[in-house]
Length: 117
Image 1 (tube, one colour):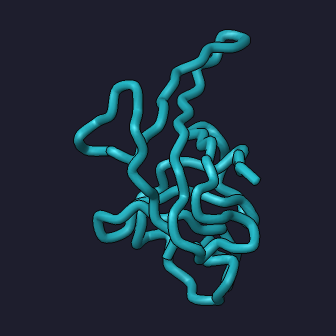
Image 2 (cartoon, one colour):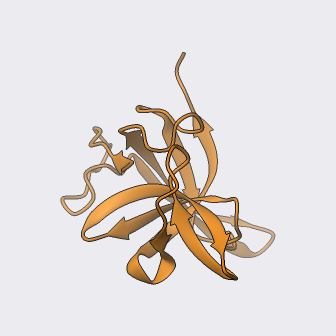
C-alpha cells in the first residue's frame, strides 16, 4: 500500500506530519486548495515511486484513471481511480486489489508529481 512519508515542513502539523506545503490560490475569482505530499512504499509503481513529491488538488473531479490521495483506516494512501461495475474504486498500479470508494475519504487528486533522478 502506498503511504505518505514524513518530511520537514516550514510549519509541520502534528496531525499531518507528511504535509510539505498547503496553499490556497485564487485565479479568475476562484479559490483552489492544493497541498504537497511525499509518497513512500511502492504499490503505485511504475507510475509513482518512493520519494516522489505529489501535488494534490482538492478541486479536481473524481474520474476513472486519475490518481488520488485518500485516508483508509487512519492511514494516508495513494491509489488510482478505476471503474468496476459502473462504480469508482481505488486500485494500485502494481496489483488488482480494489478498495471501495465508500471505504476511504478522498483528500484530493494528484495533478503533478516531481521526481529526483
